[in-house]
Amino acid sequence: MDAAERALAALEKEMMKGRGRWVADFNESFRAYRVGDVTFDLFISGNTRTKGFLLSRLFSFFLNPNYEVGFFAIDAHDRDELNARRLRRWILAAKSHMAKSEMRWAWLVLVGQSPSDSAKKCVREATDKNVGIAYLDLDSRQVISADTFLGRQLKKYIKL
Amino acid sequence: MEKTRSPIQIYYLFKSFMIMFVIQALIVMFMPAGLIGPIWYQVLAVNLTVAAVLGWYLYKQWYHMEFSYSDSRFQLKKGKGTPASYEWSEFSQVSLARNEYGEFKVRLHGSGEPLEIPVSKLKLDPFEFRFHAMDLISREKSSSA
Image 1: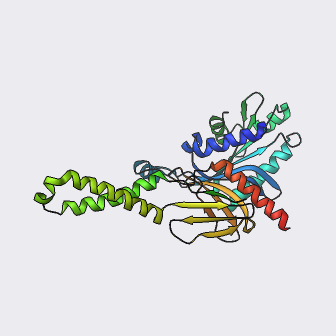
Image 2 (image 1 turned 180 degrees about the vertical axis):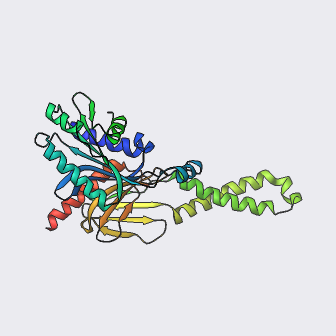
C-alpha cells in the first residue's frame, strides 16, 4: 500500500468513524467512484442530521438541518501537475454528482506530495462556495485549503 | 476454495438468553410466594439453566449468521432461514455502509436492490473485506467478459 492509499484509508476512517462525525453522518463510502469521465479514489456520502441514541437523536432532529453532503478525495500525485483546468474538471464532476444526489455541499480533498507553488495557488484560489477544497501534502503533512468557509472547515478535519 | 465465517455474536446470544430468562421470571412471579419461597435458589438455578439452553436454541434459530464464499459465489444464511446464494458477477459496485449503531455492512450494488453483507456481525474487517469483494467482483467481470 503506497502513501497516498494509506492517506485515503486514514481519511475514510476519520470521516466515517472519527472527527467527520461531528460534521455529518458520513455513512456510505465508495472507492474508485466514477462520475462522468472522472474517477474519484474515495467518495463518502452523508447527511448533516446525525443519528444517535435518544437525546442526541432528538437534539439532531430539532437543531440540525437535513442536508445531503459528500466527501470526495482523489490522488492528485498520480496524475499530471495540478493546474486550474484539472481542478475545475474535478470540481465540476463533484458538482454534477451533488446536483444529481441533491447535496447541499461537499468537500474535495486532493492527496499528493510536494505540490508546486502554482498548484498551491490553484487550491487557495478555488472560490466555489459549495465545494470546500483542500490539498493534503503527504511529504510535509500540511494541509493547504481554499480560502472559503468550507475549505477552512475541511482543514480542521483532515489532519494526518 | 470456499471460506466460511460463522462467529458467535455475543450480544445476540445474551439477548436470546435474557428473553428466555425474563419469560421464566414472569411465570415465577405469578406463582404463589409460599410455593416458591422455600426453594427459590433451586428455582433460580433451573431458570438460569433453562434460559441458557433455550437462549442458545433461540439464538441459533433467529440470529446466528453463516457466510461462506468462494472466488465465484457466496452464500448468506441467517438463523434457520433458507440460505441465499449469489454470484459475485451479479454485482457491479461495492460500498461500505455504517449504520447508526456503528455496525458496518458491505453493500453490493447490482441491477436490483443493493444486497448487504453484515461484516461487523461476521467479525470481518469491513475495510479489508470491502477491497476483497471489489477484487472478486472485478475478477469475475473480467473473466466473464
